[in-house]
Amino acid sequence: MRTLFANFVAIYRRELQSYFASPFAYVIAGVFWLLSGFFFVALLMGPQGLIQQAAYRDQMGITNPPVDVAYQFLSFFLGTLSSLALFILPILSMGLYAEERKRGTLELLATSPLTNWIVALGKLMGALTFFITMLLPLLIYQAIALSAADPPAQFTVMLLGHLGLVLLAAAVLSLGMFISSLTDSTILAAILTFALVLFLWVIDLVADSLAGPVGEALKHLSLIRNYTTLTQGIFDSSSVIVFLTYVVLGLFLTAQSIEAFRFQRS
Amino acid sequence: MIEVEHLSKIYGATPAIQDVTFSVEQGEILGFLGPNGAGKTTTMRILTGYLPASSGTARIAGFDVHEDSMAVRQRIGYLPETPPLYPDMTVESFLHFVARIKGVVAGDRAKQVESAMQRCNLLEKRKVLIRKLSKGFKQRVGIAQAIVHDPPAIILDEPTVGLDPRQIIDVRNLIKSLAGDHTIILSTHILPEVSMTCSRVAIINRGKVVATNTPEQLMAELAGESGYDLEVEGNLALVQDRLQILAGVKSVERVSDETLSDDRQRLRIALEAGPDPGREIAALIVGSGLGLYEMRRTKVSLEKVFLDLTTEEKTIDPDLVAEAYDRATTSAGSLPDSTPAVADPWDADSAHLDSTVETDSTDDRSEGEAP
Image 1: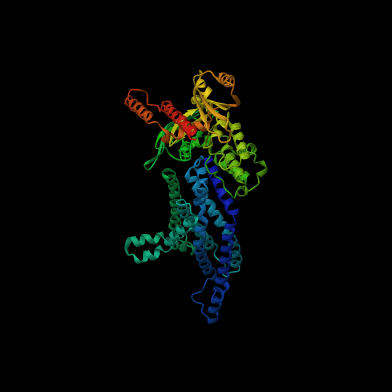
Image 2: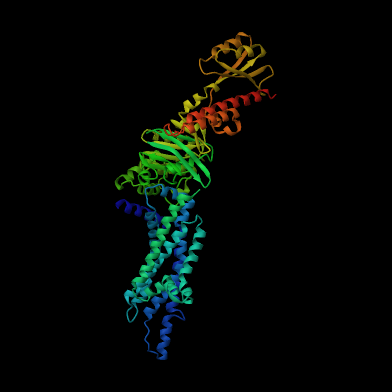
């Protein structure tokens, strides 16, 4: 058990280190911060922004139903972040195994006393940690903006929304990691991951057109639907479980694909 | 320490290695010699647990590489053909990482990394990113990662490939210094490397081990090939026949040599195993009034052994093939009652050796007669 943990830490640290040592990751983070900052301002203070709309309603004397600008803003902004993440996450996950395969370092990992599970888990957590560090600066300006809200913003909504974002990221990264383990081309891994995630994103549209229990079941697989539940401030354990299932599925498939890769390669 | 028995690996329908059997004693360096594509890398990958064998067993330090893969992985250091390096790490942090995943306990890590860097002459580059290192240094980092956890068995796949001559010497010395405490298998297609670094050599060709022995003994196997090269002035016809009948002389032939003036000629004398007739040869030539300008002992180099052993398809004698076939069928017939038909490499080898010796001398002759 202790060695398993030590192995996990070793893989995790190396993975994190590779993100922080690469200019590539900083470019991604920079673009993410730029875009999210732009949307933050536009959503809140732009000409069509929420503050303008609220002011407009006040002028018109519409007070019923009352609007909770902070709450609305959070769910809009988190929705935007998830769309950005859709593009960012496949790029973070594309190199996880494809790079190792290309460089031949997979041979080092595969001949070291490590289990495939631990390697996959360490890598996933490394990528996820990098994503979380990308979110941290956003928390600061959200906190600044929301501290001025009257009535005060609900802390639980903010917490659940970001928890949802992290879970969503973990699910996407895990599936992306699996796809990355299938190829030694990082670009191909990114494109395939993007396609898969897009499909899981919109699966509820497909589900809507299908009647009966199949459509009902497909609806629950939709990433965006489960995510929206959380950003609305509703803690729905089924949503959490769906995301965790994706994570475990990704880990399992990755471990299997690496095992298969070793056994069939010629 | 390392025992390999009847190992085979089949990719689809093509066998990569067939019935490979050898063993390496504690502290030995075994050179795995063969042309490209002979199955060296496949064998090594099976030993490291990276690939499963189709049949046969391999054990390292008593652990089966497939059954007890984790125990084996802890006890081996492995340098694949392309050194597995993370270009964005420094030498030191990479070695720390490897030490960690190889299970070196935290207290020993710094010490082990330090000594691995020292052994591989990497101390001055410890803070340099691997991406910025030259090929030679990268190779050394590759070796350092194979020894950082001080494994009892080290497996090196072509450790000197792509290095400049100076670096090659460094790497060979490093490998030699590791023997004793460590058991080493290294693969190479460079022949002098084996005679310089290895205490034993296994020659592999087309997936089969065709010979296993010490480099010296492999050469001794071809002792019949040793002889003298002479540069003689005068009418050779006088002595050639008399040389031929000297005790210990197997054959005498003229070799064309454009660089010599018209009155000088080059003779190649092949010897039989046994007492060396060098003294008599010199006495005969000088006694006949001919001028002796050069007399040089020729020894079979490992290169020749290697070529002889690995190019049998072109030069094999049909009679010997038939003979080997007979032998194979009779031994197959006796398989059930006798002890498991251990691959008996010696039998097969001597057939190869004979055949190549045969054909090689004909080659030489034709070369001599050409002008």
